[in-house]
Structures are given as C-alpha cells and as structure tokens.
Length: 389
Image 1 (cartoon, rainbow, N blue to C red):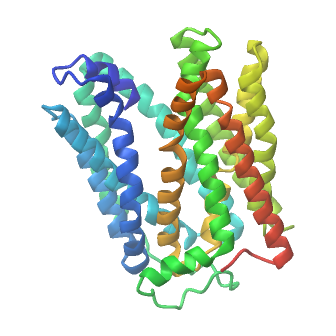
Image 2 (tube, rainbow, N blue to C red):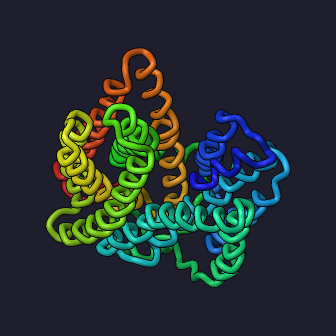
C-alpha cells in the first residue's frame, strides 16, 4: 500500500493528504476492533473454514480496491481488508499451537511472523513495480486474486483437537470440549498474571515499533539531513533484513533455551529488549552516520528477535480452549495502546518542543517492554514452572 500512495494522490480520486494517509490506519483500526469478534469464534467453531473466510475477505477486499471510483469506496475496501486479517490473524496461531508441541513453537511462530517483514518488502517492491508499468489499480488485482486459491487451500487444513500438543498438562488437554466464550473468559484472562504482563510488555514494544516505522524516516531527513530516497530505502532495507533474520534466529534460540528454563521465551525477549533500549537511544542521539546506522541495525536485531517468542509465550500462557480469544485480546491491546497512538503522541510532543526530543519516547517504551518481560520471566521462575493461569 505505501508504494501506491503517490499514484493514488495523482489519480482521479484526488484525495487530500489527510485522506491519503488515513488509508493505512483504516486497516489497522478495523483489524484490532474485529479481532475480538473472531477470537471467540475460533475457540468454538471449526478453524480452517474461518481462516479460509478471512483469506477470502482479505483477497476480495484487496481486489475491490482496484475498482474504486471514489475515495470513500477505496477507504471502505481498505477497512474491509482489516476484517479478513482479523479472522486469519487471531485463529491461525491457535491452530499452529495444535500442530506443534511447545518445544518447537518458538521456531514455528518465528517463521509465521517473519512473513510480516517479508510480506511488507514484497508488497512495496511488487506494488511499486506493477504501479510503474500498469498503474495502481492493477497492483490491487495482482495481489488480491491469488488469495482466492489460498482460501480454497485453507479448507483442506486439518483441525486437530484443541490442546492436542499439550499432553504435558501445561494449559490444558485436547479432550476438553470448547467452552462457551463469554465475559467469564475475558475475566479469566484479566486474572491471568503471566498473560497480562506479557501483553502489557507487548503493547509497549509495539508502541516503540510504531514510532520507528512511522517517524524515523522523517527524523533521518529533518534531523540528520538525509535525502528522502536514502532515508526511506536504507531504513526499509535495514528493517526488512533485521526483521527476517532476527525473528528466525530468536525463535531457534528460544527453543534451544527452553530445555533449561520454561521461561526462556520471556527471559530472551526481556533481556534482548533491555539491551536494545540504550542502542535505540544511541541511534537517536549520535550524529555520526556510522554510529547511528550501526545502532539502528543492532537495536532492530534485538527487537525483532522477540516477535515469535512473545506470541509463543502468549499461546503457552492460556488454556488451549481460549487461545484464539487470548490472541484476539492481545491484538486489540497492542494496537490500541501501541502503534495506533504512538505516531500521534510523538507528533504532539514534536509540535510542543522538537522532533529530536519527541523521538526519545521510543527508547523509553523499549525499556518499559524489557522491564515488564524480564519481571514476568523472574516471576515465573519463582512460581516454579510454565506461566499458566
């Protein structure tokens, strides 16, 4: 989507900058609000058909964006994409947890979530390429239509009993019938201290990432004086490369350490994030290009190492019968308190003082995430075992 914005700006739709830049958060807001709707469904109903429905909605809505004849219809199409993403994003993790035992989940979820930087990079490159040769409308068609095949393939997925890979007793077993998800389920999540701490840290982490993605290009241009093409290309390349490598390595390392402590995912995420905080500060404070680029890469490597691990920790912290609901609530929380408000908060601080000061909230958020996750790991060690409800 970002690579198409300028072409959409120059199209017959003639959106203002406010309208143009609202197309991306339209997806995010609908995604986080729709997630709690699909979470309980994923805990009660057959999961492959729901995943297929989500992929179908995502694909059709994406393709329909190419038919938009007004800004309103394009905005509606982009918002509807968030509905499809919510169905898939909340239910797929619970299904994966029933395919693989916990000693493999760090790697499994790291591979799953590594699709985010890879997909973002491919989307920008493919979208820009198609836009340059065929126009922005066909970019939506080319991305959306293959999803119809993926939706059909999703129907062939096996739906094992919930908790099928949790025979060791951590969080439940596969024989229990799915409960009716209601207010009692949400109350149980609120009382689940390991889950709450993990999600709170995740919200602070997402706040920082939202600031990095949204504000860092402007920071590099205004404060460091880089040309736009250098700032966006270098930061984008660094983010994609570190996101892919660190996510995969973090998952592998977390699974290796799981044999030593069942808090491995939280320990590794917490300590890596604590080390990332001063590196993020150095990246913002240093004036020498060699220093701030090295610090950016190092900080992002440490930050992205937690992506798969934290989602694995969330899955392991709740009973199998309510995992989709738990993922849905975490999606709502991390976006509501994370990357949705962070760019605006940074903008308000920047208007009141300066951008150089405003971005200092990013390493503070990183530090908060690291402290919360490290405390959660320490608390779990003292409790003596897996962080279960």
